Length: 197
Ligand SMILES: [Ca+2]
Image (cartoon, rainbow, N blue to C red; front, side, top):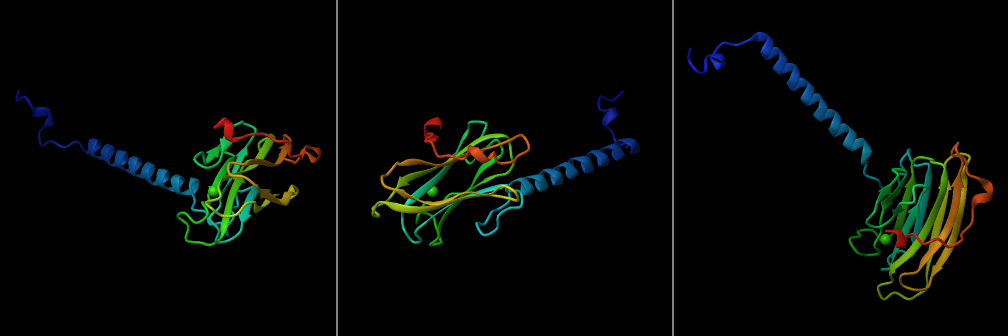
């Protein structure tokens, strides 16, 4: 018997069919993974709030200025989310970080976070002045926290940030097991988030 007789020219139709099926399966899997990656990581423009956002957290400060203001959030899982830690949960997400005029083609200073799943528990939203970059202080920052449907507006107001590295608790609120806002849960007792990074 020749040593490689089994690997000769003889073709097994069942083997070829199996190989074709295997190829199709692998190819389909690659297509599915590609589509899932695309769906999970959409490119977000601030003007287009994704449908999946249940609660929208927005910060805006004077256009064309160099201040780098950061939104920081913490959900029921206790994981800090903000610059460098873009998602947790996976409910809470930093969707757009604005660094003032650094890497920014737009004059608009606008940063936003989303809460995608209404997990029960407490949420904390903080503002942090990373740097004023020689701009005068204080800097006024408009913050809005708005939920879809029955939740409505949770917070809207202007915060004056007086010092570099200031961390200010804007609002804390809690959701119940049905994802409804607990009416008496809204307050702004200070809770540090950056310290938990
Ligand atoms: Ca920022």
